[in-house]
Image 1 (tube, rainbow, N blue to C red):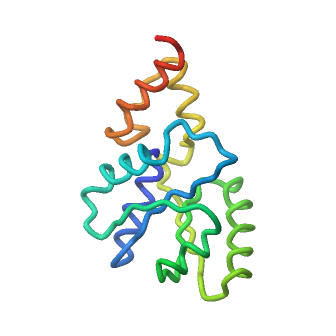
Image 2 (cartoon, rainbow, N blue to C red):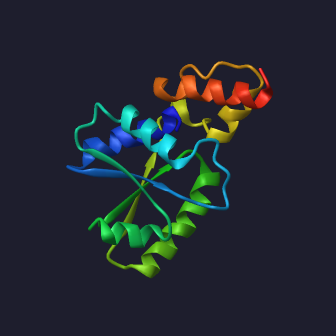
Length: 151
């Protein structure tokens, strides 16, 4: 979880009465943290947002949205490169369930360059994650990457 993610969550929470932030479990991606850890990070980072629930799912996003009785999927965008994939996914989701809309929210300019892989890379080389990730993530990120590096 980056500060870019938190930016999108906070802004979406201000637009809707209820927001479910869900981690999509993708077995093809090797995440640095396990799902329970990521859920805990999200819960703590979003603790100040009374209308936000945190959850996880595997499978199709539209199927999860339907189970949640959600009509809108919110996707954060950083750059044109994000848009291409997200647009393709939104069109497929629309085809799979015509009742669900996708809403794109651009991240704030100060977070445009952030990605979890970039943060892991620079922190792995000794840079500080201060200001890049929520404080709740910072300590665990440093601990995990130091353990990997053997330091």
